[in-house]
Length: 171
Image (cartoon, rainbow, N blue to C red; front, side, top):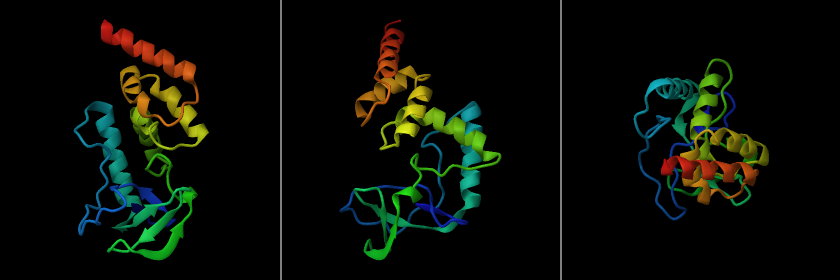
């Protein structure tokens, strides 16, 4: 995790791996909003968020073992717990802290763009409900990832979205 300079809380997820994997000796401290090139407004949103994260984060990374109840045990460079534990509330649900000010608009559009994928995460009911509504605008993506959603708040809405995706694919 990149850590927010002001609060000391996790800000942006950089990498994840299985419990038994060795920690890499080096990891990029640059958070990327997307794995591939994006175009148009999304490119501007991604660029703005990447700049915000770069300004808000400490220059170091924090390795954390997430615990079943959502908290996190901080690890040293060898992957050994260092005795610190972060509460579940410190971790951003959508894997990126929410900015205020000018970056908030970019964050909202970015999360809307990722909504079908974010629904695969263990989210609070309020966030899941909001993302389901947002994801409905991307019928194909939502239908594609639907089998991986751990919970559905509005099955009527998501079933309608899945039907829409089938109709669009048949057209």
